[in-house]
Length: 148
Image 1 (cartoon, one colour):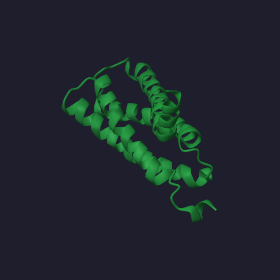
Image 2 (tube, one colour):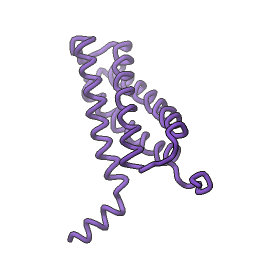
Image 3 (cartoon, helix red, strand yellow):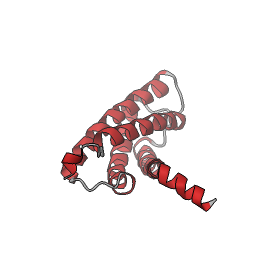
Image 4 (cartoon, helix red, strand yellow):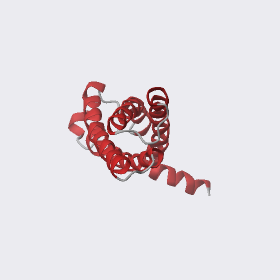
């Protein structure tokens, strides 16, 4: 039984650790978003378009800052120069930040879905996008000549 667990861990370690880091990143970014909502907008559950933009941006900045360092260290175990990776990481996260804004506008402002529910739906879509970008674009180790 323990051998089977070890085998599964080895096979799926990156995805498992990514999900753990993703949960922690979500906690950090949601905490920042909802603290900002409390401070700036008196805990509204139906923010305006402008308020959604501000809250999504705060959510994004907190999440990207935490996610870069944790993904680099624990998920992809990268040793490449930060000046090479960080800009690619930020660019990839800008695209999913735009996705978050669009999803929040559609779900919240157009469909009238509660802020918490809309945020959770958006987080699932953004997490999938972030993993794909990180794996294929940011922490890609497929070119061995660059690693030498």
